[in-house]
Length: 272
Image (tube, rainbow, N blue to C red; front, top):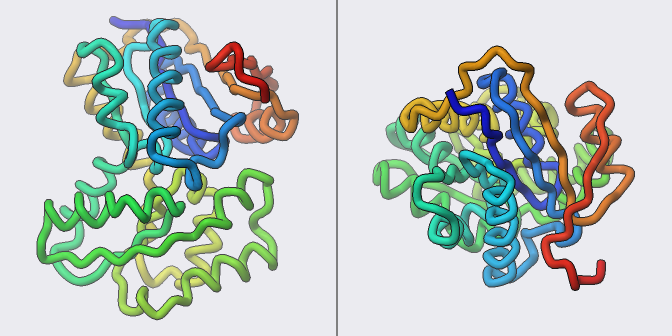
């Protein structure tokens, strides 16, 4: 029995999709969620900056006794996973959001084409192309950057005619013609999954990273024998590097409960 929390972090609200999925798959587990709102979005930051932010957040979560770290951000997973692994004690597992989705896709699609959309940082890293095609050389991975989407979602601007128009514009690119599945390569994107499905008229699979990653976290905790088997009610903490009322409201709606954000500045001398 290990009652310590899981540490989950992202640049903003996107990782809440992963946290919610983890809550569903592992209802006994407590977690600390950190949204780096002072530095969002990560998609247009340099790899060095992303590594610096990610390492400090991971260290903060470990300092607060987290037993596992989930990098609930595709851009941070692409650029900072290896450095995070090196920056924290080796007995603490680190789960990124790319590898589980790559493994799922490579196993479920033997040949043909799959698409992936994500931030500029994720797409430019070619992380999905490299991981999936290494696992399954018969599968062709086509990727497109969709830089407006994360900011749009962060502002709560989705599920309306204008957001549908922007999504349709991105997905209409000729390079995506004939794909058998589309990976939502940003943890914000499950919030627009219905709009993406509407564009494709539900004719292809839309691969939602949140549920796949949640199962991967469960598998890792079981393998490490650090599941919480107590009957105590789990605790959920939500931290941000810069407080915003909109983030607090979005989080409360997401988890259907009244909650309070705690501001935790990752560098005390930084002015936001």
